[in-house]
Length: 244
Image (cartoon, rainbow, N blue to C red):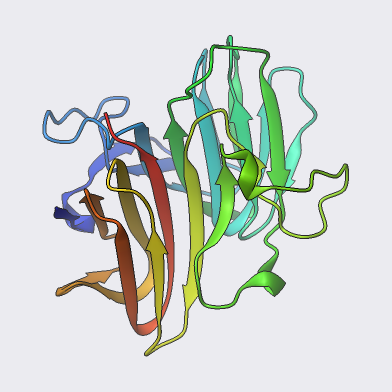
């Protein structure tokens, strides 16, 4: 089953320096039709003005992944060292037993970002954070795993990440990225017990007979292969989570 979510139907949470377009219920946005997608609890498209901040807390038992679309962000969580992120950088805070304060601050040019909240499959443990640079040199037009809770997705763990290995989720989930040239496609295969949620970051794509533009999304349930065709050069992000 394929369900389309258009950009103009998203919820809005806004302050002086922050705007969040919410795919699912979040903060002051409430919609009984859009609570979550399987174990994907939240997906927010954020925009921060220059030096603006976005703060949360306390939060526990959730993996929060922040992917920078443009500009720069600095993530600061409790007593962890600050993490600076540039475009296509990825930050994970696995909140475990609890984090009191989580803050993301934009740089001088502001920032746009996508933030994913995954419900973990393991018992709450010690909070941890991890980050990655963009690794654009590994792009080949297909789906690339940015984050995963499956050990087989990162067969070789090293102290220094040089190969674009995914960050390690506590959730049995994946976040994938594809930069698809115009006229080409990318396909992802999974099991029918999984829920897929694809969001278009930029460009125009087609999924089955549906055309999607930037900010649009599609949920796929009971689908074993999802094929995305780019009508113009496009960037998409895809989550693969356990169905609830």
